Picture 1 (tube, rainbow, N blue to C red):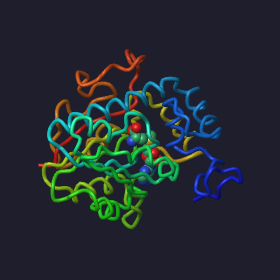
Picture 2: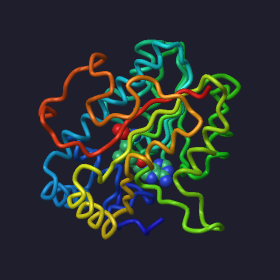
Picture 3: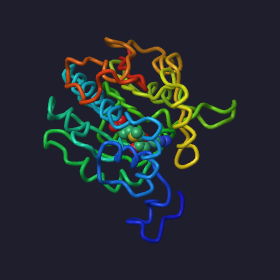
Length: 277
Ligand SMILES: C[S@@+](CC[C@H](N)C(=O)[O-])C[C@H]1O[C@@H](n2cnc3c(N)ncnc32)[C@H](O)[C@@H]1O
């Protein structure tokens, strides 16, 4: 972890360089970000002014997918790459349908841990827990999540707008890449579990995606937009639920509300939900 700034609110929170979780919070109009995050956020907006709308549409995908899963009877949720609390959070959506739902959140950014108390306000019939970990530590995440989730029963595993921050394996001995990370996690899930993903792509606007990628690379984290076929590969061995792979706003629009400004927007990502047979 980088050294924290002298005026940092916590020794673990580095306010000297932008962080994806805090930039995303800024795009969503949140208050849990710092001037470095806003500065980088404004540079991104100069390239793609629709990022705040796209971020809202991504949150809407989370709400629709989570509500739908709870309505299907899913009672256990593992959400990795949770982000800074943004109302409604995933547990509020799940427990709004099923008050006894049990949720475990996970993120590797200490800013999320610092705000975890807002995530941990469970309905008394259910539970909410938080694990601070990197998604690549899948075995450790599942072990710690097992304090409140029963992995012999179905779990909805969501990695929403996370995997484009995880690169590919760089060689046979390299660190696990995004696809190995997901398949490793899915292997630990019981039949009847679900995988919920959204992911940035360069398929629709390659030049803009490259420019935004360079900005992230220089200032914060490497960004790995993936084409549709690479996104589809995350679901190997799983059965897509309708409507399969779609872009922002297209996943079961009847389950939610349109986001102001979404009409006619050029898309930037893919979303899908699939079931483990
Ligand atoms: C764009 S935000 C998405 C937040 C939320 N899932 C949503 O879609 O609204 C991405 C989140 O992934 C987290 N993240 C990035 N790399 C990660 C990693 N290797 N392990 C765990 N979390 C990570 C960031 O800290 C950030 O909170």
